[in-house]
Image 1 (cartoon, rainbow, N blue to C red):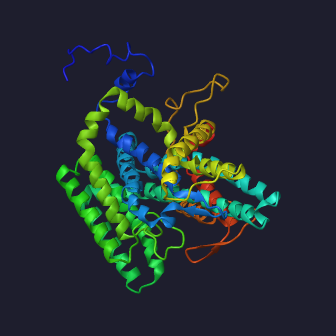
Image 2 (image 1 turned 90 degrees about the vertical axis):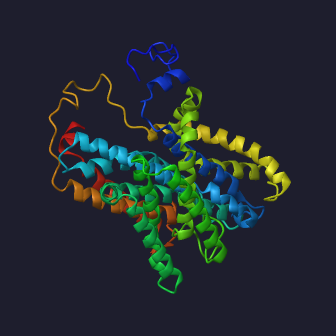
Image 3 (image 1 turned 45 degrees about the vertical axis):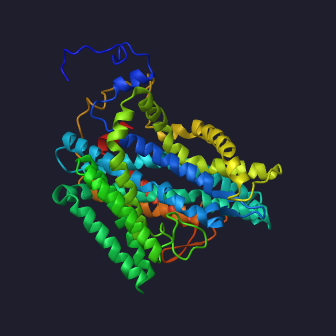
Length: 480
């Protein structure tokens, strides 16, 4: 665009009203991929709405899933399972961050530690706030004897302390994707989409072994293969390799393969896990989920030109920018809001219509409005933990700024230690997501190969945090 071209009043940041759609649009870098931002925010909010639609408390006091009670609803998950989009977007974001780090840190030593530490802290700050609150709720439930009570109240309390933290599986798996991102980016630079093809092939082989009579444990390899394949698509997106033609191939081929796999078995119809099912497409992920993920990512590729034009409008882009900072916090606390509302309505004698009936569908908008209000209150309280710490104010002792201080060379062991911290944090978060937060009750739950208790999960997570802290550059540690 010519530098002499006059700008309109609406596009001039100096004249636009601060916080207005025009000011936000004018402040946005010209090359920013706005569709990626919308996919990140939108995928988390779709998960929230999906959970609000699915989770319910039955009249006999069980926490139930609407998809299990009304199997006809399960095909909705073919479009509502949008976590593949978040991993796609994560790949785009990680590619951008790694490129920036390479420019600022041309010497490779310490770059991996800097990358993983920054990404991990971004995820862990709001997650730890969530865990502290829920661990306190669990302790209170135990100390008051609520979890030991017979009947509905005790059962709901025990189930809630395991159910609500289950959403942290996403944090653990995404943290694992962060840990592998530098390596996978290097592989992408060398092999391009061949890396995706290799991961898809390996995932298919894992399912062949798993469902062909091999050990069930081998299926857990797909926690890495499936989600890394979808994350790898983000690198291809960043490098403009996902053309419209390839988008059609992904959408048609992915959904066709998913339909074939579901039709022939042994894969279930639902693309989310359901209680009591013999096989889950989510835990561990199956090739059917991978096919669905490729299909929905293909749809995102096809919609990219249209949505780029839509998001060029200041009002549309402003909505994304305003919602963005609250998406992760809303994701973490939306089940808390749901259980709170369901328990309050149950306590005051307001019963829910039978799942799937006309009355049930007609009351969903009202329930969603109430849930949105309660979630908004929780977000207002906890969103501060989803933001980077601000620099200290005027009371901070005078001294050279961070930019002015000489850069301290990274410790030679920082990168290997960051890799170990990544592995420990990954398992710590996954264990907590499986066994729950009832630390005082400390009831064991099966995880991979043995029974594990909540105390073990928190201990592993704590060790990971200590290791992550040790990866800080020496200058940063002294500054603090």
